Image 1 (tube, rainbow, N blue to C red):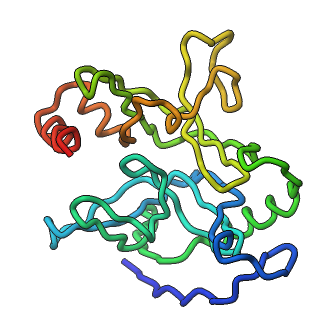
Image 2: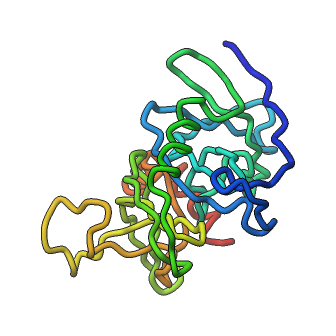
Image 3: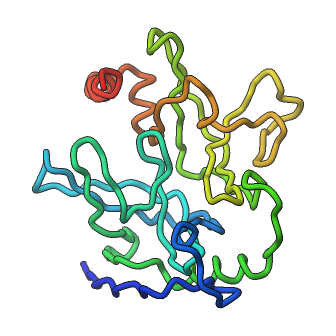
Length: 231
């Protein structure tokens, strides 16, 4: 297994296209997404299992206004940068992993950096509102959202169809409103989609393996889910 040490990011906060200084509050805003299509994973650990590493499929890579490129994963009730991972068990990001060549690395792959920078420059546009849609990518890791009713008296596991990037940098998980479906299959951008984060009953995201275990009432998965319900 080969490992590579990360470089320290530049402290200069300059827009990569205009070459003008970026306000501190805007420098980390996500401006473009690229789905992860080669099965690269995030490695993480937690304090409850100090001698173990866990892995999770990366959803996408994100380009920030300051030129930084990071991997993103759905985590609890948000989509987060892997290197900023934090969970109730003190989860810590440990790097990225390419199972195909058994390699651990700590920076975005060059081909993803090139893809994001090229597409952001090619599709550069002006937006008037914070919630204007920049673009939308499909979910390719089987993410599910938990929608609850009556404070977990009942709940639904709903598949995430896509992820929609807004001009303000927020990323919304898009779910199907079955009452508005006019044609199938439902694809990214369909009018029947709505943002999970805007639903009053939305609670958490789950990877498809955990979601399937919950659907089958797996004891270990249900025990872990119960801990989240009680918090």
